[in-house]
Length: 362
Ligand SMILES: Cc1cc2nc3c(=O)[nH]c(=O)nc-3n(C[C@H](O)[C@H](O)[C@H](O)COP(=O)(O)OP(=O)(O)OC[C@H]3O[C@@H](n4cnc5c(N)ncnc54)[C@H](O)[C@@H]3O)c2cc1C
Image 1 (cartoon, rainbow, N blue to C red):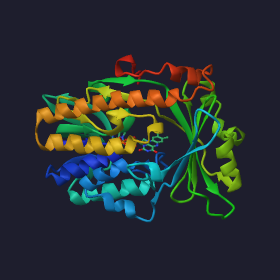
Image 2: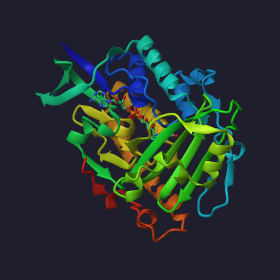
Image 3: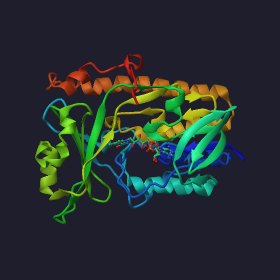
Image 4: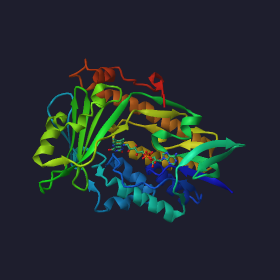
């Protein structure tokens, strides 16, 4: 049996594509291992995602009690003064702080209810024979005429069939903290730059806090496991954690957060969506919105069986990468206190255009 279309990957991009394709009558085979219980970082959903969720008929899921509005973001960036970026002045509205697992589960349930067939395994090999995809899944050869690559930064299809570019070496070390003094912590997000990189702390919807430290993967600050020595946590974040009696609950984990993308984002019989197409610096807070947007655009182009629409999708991804790189350059350029440190010196020289980026070694 040859499936018309297979979606690979069980994150937000994969779930949204499986849902959109099923809503359009395409009966997708969705190949995605179960999520598991591990904490997945990335909880700030931009208000720009709401129209996309409405398109999918999924916006009501944001009203679930497990999520909450983000009310205040404060950053010490360019000076040691904490500056408020209050939700009231964000024109598109306040972001939502998601219970990420609950959100992904709700999208998954909706995709299956709409008619997507889920195969709960990873794809371990991909080949094309006479224009048909042969996917190795749990020892079976699954065949499909068209493939959506939603496998995140692994990009198991796009990484083989298109060039992947990488614009920096940013990586993150993160840990979850639990509040032990019983007091309800003030819901805030704090961003603090320091000599070796920058920190991010956000109160999660369940009143735990996630603390992320970002620097380049090849710099000593990353290898020194900064989060393990809580003394290194910067001033404002440190004071917040101390005041509310937060203690580290999880072993710090490391994850790649570089800016990388494929060009083009489409090929013969495949399309890349979400992080598999373009993965951004978490400072932009737009990864999940991009996952939803690319899933909808690519699904609609597939459903229309319109090559021009598919090309327009790929062109939009390339344009989005260009705009993103320019915006990233402008944001990092605002921090000038440590231009001699290797992390910030690299930011001064950041690639502002896709053609300045290096081919990805991955
Ligand atoms: C530290 C950090 C903080 C972030 N903060 C934010 C934030 O605040 N706001 C925001 O909008 N974004 C944030 N992001 C980005 C956001 O999490 C991603 O952009 C988003 O998860 C992309 O969704 P995706 O579905 O494309 O990829 P993923 O979520 O990575 O999902 C890919 C899926 O593919 C599966 N997969 C991989 N290989 C295979 C295979 N061979 N076969 C089958 N399945 C496979 C994986 O298991 C996974 O389930 C953050 C990211 C990080 C790392």
